[in-house]
Amino acid sequence: MTEITGEIEGIVEGTDLPKRLKDEVYESIEGRDVTDEQAASIAEAVESRYLDTRVEPLDPVGTVSAQSIGEPGTQMTMNTFHYAGVAEIDVTQGLPRLIELVDARKTPDTPMMTVYLDEQHAENREKAHEVVWNIESTRILALGDVSTNVADMLVQVNLNEQTLDERLISAETVAEVIEDSLGVEVTQTGTTIEFGPEQPSYRRLLQLVEELREIVFKGIDEVSRVVIRKEEVEGNEEFILYTEGSAFGDVLDIEGVDASRTTCNNIHEVYRNLGVEAARETIIDETMNTLEEQGLGDVNIRHLMLVADIMTAEGTIESIGRHGISGNKDSVLARAAFEVTVNHLLDAAVHGEVDDLDGVTENVIVGKPIKLGTGDVNLRMGGATTDGSGRAD
Image 1 (cartoon, rainbow, N blue to C red):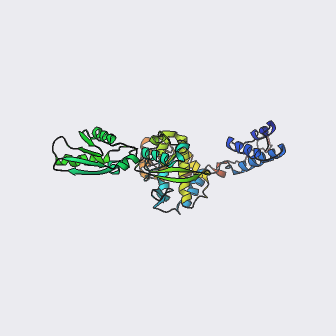
Image 2: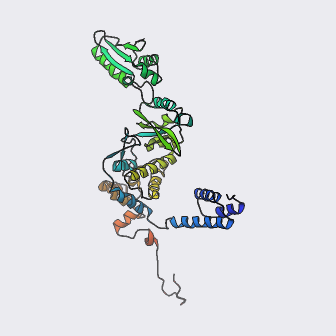
Image 3: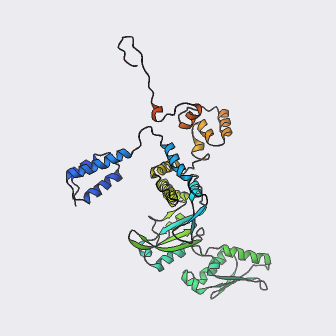
C-alpha cells in the first residue's frame, strides 16, 4: 500500500480536479503500490479525462439537455404502475411520473417512502415490526369489529385481543382515544367497548360509527399501509419498510428509523424537512430511476442535474412550465413562444416591456443568429488605416 506523501499530495492538489475526484485519486493511489512518478501519472490522466468531459464554452447545454431527455421520453409508456420492490405497493412510473417531477406537483399520485432502520431494528423482525406499527395508521377496523345496537342506541366495538397485543396497544388506550375524539361517554369491559349519542338519534348513531372509522389510534394518518421486506444492502441482510402514503418529517422522528438513508418520492416533503440541496438530489434520483425503469438509463445524468439545478436555483422548487421557470423568463417572446401566446404579448404591450433578444428562442423568432457557439463571435474586417499600416481595427 502506498502512503500519501507530501509530494503526492502536492501533485494531486495542483490539479484542476474537484474535491470529490481528488479524494477518489487518493483512494486509488493508497490502494496500489505505486511510486511518486506513477502517482503523478494517475493524477494527470484523471485530470486529462476530467477536462475532456467538460462542456466547451458557448455550448447550448439547455437545448442539448432538453433534446437528450425529450427524445428518449417519447419511448416511455403513458400509463404504467411499477411495484416498488414489493408486489403490494404500486408507484406511478413512466411518462406520468416524469411529468409529475418536472411540474413539481405538490403531492404525487402515489406518494411512498422507503424507510431504512438503524442497526438495532434492521436485523430483528420483531423490533422492525415495532417501527411498522408506529408508522402504519391503525384504525378501528384493524383492531376489531364494529356493530350498532339500534334498540339501546349503542355502538359496540369488539376488539381482537391478539391484534391488540401484536400492535402493542391496549383496550384502555382505545377507549380513551374514542372518548377524547368523539366527546362521548365510553364503557369498556375487557375487550368490549360501548358508547352512544347523548340523546337517542338514529342519525347521530350512524354519524358516530362513521367518525369512529376515521380515528387513528396509532401510527401516522397519511400512511395507510407498510410492507416489510428483507433485502441485501451492501452485503448485509436487513429489513426495509415500504410505505403507501408519505409523511417524511414524522417518520424521521420515529425511534428505530435511520434518518440518513430513508427516502421519500415527494420532493416538496424532502424540501420542507431537509432543505433545497436534498430536494435537488431527490429530483435527480427520482428522474434517473424513472428513466432506468423504462430502459432509458443511458441518458447522461448531467442533463438531469441541469434540470434539477434550474428548478432549485432560487432556493425553492419551481416547476418547468408557464407557472414556473418558462413563465418567469425576462424575454417576452420566449414566454409567448411557450404557452398562452396572446396573453403574454398583450400583457407586455400594456406594461410597455422591452425584449433585449438575449436568449435562443427570441433570436430564432426574429431571424437573428443565436448567441451560442459561433453565433456569439463577432468578426469585423478593418480596411487600411490613414497611416497606411493596413492594421485591422
